[in-house]
Length: 346
Image (tube, rainbow, N blue to C red):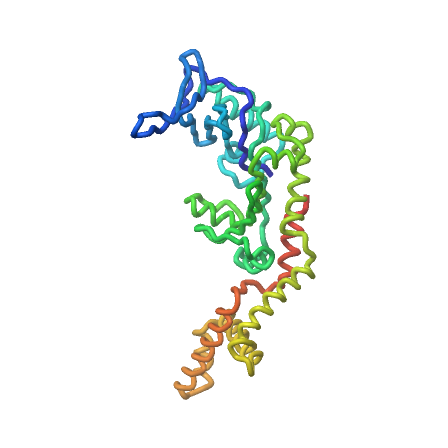
């Protein structure tokens, strides 16, 4: 369930033996004035700079000035629960495993000269996730996501990622194995997986959704609350429709596709529309080469075969111009119901 956590440390000590690195502040050329802040103090003195940081393969710690101009410093620790537990972030970690990870990270901080009690820290970001093994290839669901939230679909460089976001939270759906391949990670041991991530991006939103923001509250009934709220959040964001309503949304898209043909071919637009649909599905399921060979078996006139092939390609292009790709034999309602039942099952 939990993936990335970002904690704001409420009580911490940077020892003189710490491996923390301080980044000096910038300065103004004309005056030489340094733009830096007091970051932390210990027996060696007070250390100034723009920020201090300590990054490992398992977690990142950053000390930086807080907004507001009061020269206060915040210490932020970010890590992935499953990556610390398993070595990768594919599978979920239970409540006891999550507690063990937090204790482990606290111990590693201590070994690097940072003393703190992570149970007293506040959540400043919480990412939860659910893995779903889809019945269709990921591309089969593009059209469904586009219909549901087309104006907020965002393409990423490792494939298509559908992202709903504002300044406080994000809902993200993506092909997990494609993301792993993008990072040059092996996927041979994992099933085809669609990942649903809900990200709360600040302490106030965490408190609003879960009713608590302290780490220690996670192990006082808070873990069960997170699981319940995770399902509620997806129901309200992506899965608030009935399958019938999704089909109605799909009909609106089909209407727009038809409109393109009606505007281009006012007199016999539906005839052209049906021709284009037939050409599209014929080339999709059989392929242009297969259609050509079949025509050659029926028609000895090579010119007629060539013309028929051109008609097929032209009709196919007309539909592709007007519509998004269709990748599944299932209806939109069936695709939607499949994902809804898997994601919203607690």
